[in-house]
Length: 505
Image (tube, rainbow, N blue to C red; front, side, top):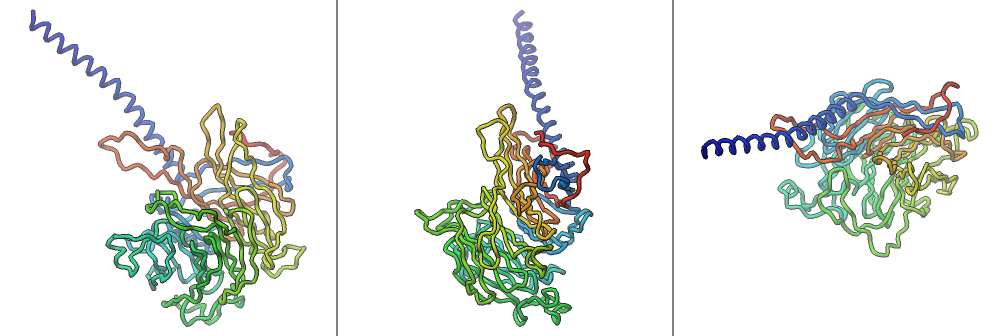
């Protein structure tokens, strides 16, 4: 009798244990299945970018126009390293710095394709890249206090030059790879240096966190000018130069240089500064986020925009800014030789902060026009969104429209907040919105091509922001939560059967 009770107790214990195990396993399997479906959906969107949702304001200054956007995945591109990302367009070529350097051919109305990935050293992440105006050289800066020059056609490393004036953002590093360099320093902040190229010849500029600006050029070559499509004719068919040097270094700003760009004739450089940096709080950068920087206590430096001559760095004019700049763009169309009042305008550029865009004269820095670009700026009411402006570009219609890219967060008390990327077109004479297109996801980086024709976007899926709490033994590595697409963007006519409407979220 006792043995029978023991067997019954053991059987009951096994039954209850199996029931509890199955009760816990079934939700886990279901959760794993849902996570798998999310990854499948992400992979599908990576190959098939979502259609944008268009918002046409009832009082649009261009009542017959709307935005046309078509996104393309990049054939052969690996997206796993996209938290460290910056890009620059050179005609139909996009040079990406995403830990390494990738060159992508991005023709209009066709799928972009990865052409080459430079054989960069595996011990250094590349933060920024710029293509020379003649298309022959790509300059890069990364973790080490060096600037590298590459042959754009072959990917060959032409020259590596040590930086003899590193900023405070370069921290001591004991890594064996850092010890190869004379100062044994390493950058963790991806934005500690700003690298740009002139629109002609082989001329580069670097703006630094300490407010200094450097000019770099090829040795034994004349600086670019306006002749022959911004390229010196006798150098057009020669191979890429192999030697480079710094031709100028000047302390132009008190605060950090956050934007800079050459004028179309390559004779001047416009630079924009932010606030004064005194140190770095976090040495190791979090993926997708820059290192935290220390701002000086009682900082008296004001943001400023300045135009200087090349290569003397003589200041042509300097204008203080009221707010910290978040985006900057030069209107190339206004610098062309076009009579004002027909298809052109006064030479101008745009500086944006979190609330408005300021159009300023390239000739003297005077304010031409300012207007607000935030569609909604309150979070106290249901359905209201907050936004931050991330990128600007002037269009090809005589500098119109002005394109903006914003990170938007739609707050809705009755449902989960939605993260979106908002692309808007603005009529600058009236300071009014023409139309907007919205795409789901959290914006990490946005890069416009010249004249606002193409837009490279890196987005993070909302699902990808949550850490997976369970894995299976047979599970393969999860797909990257980042998506990288290149979008053809344009203003197009809309039919009368497509009336203005508000976006339904």
